[in-house]
Length: 144
Image (cartoon, rainbow, N blue to C red):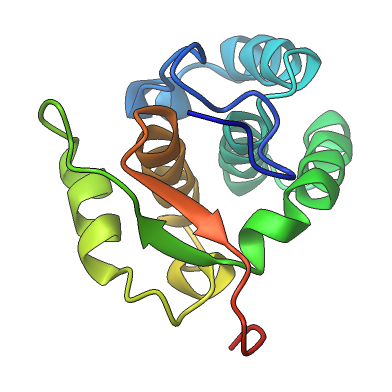
């Protein structure tokens, strides 16, 4: 899969981000967040940063990484989630639900809820893009 603007290195070569990592210790999530940021895997970085901020509000490094990832992902978040292929294998329940909610009109930012589910949904988005099932495309009529 080609690399879309703002996607960083989210493609088939990117390592999967298991939802279980979002419940790992603070130290493990910080290490993984920094590793993903260094690899320019901004969706994984954002999912990990937000999971940290949910459990440790005000976590300084997570705030910095979140800001960096959101800046890089602005084109993704303002685009519409679009199915581009059929899955070659099974998807996680979260990825299936996110894909089902994608109507090619709502922006990715709109599809991602606030609160405790957001890191899980970011993880699902990472999965969909990584396996080549969906992408975020700039909408012709502008974001909703």
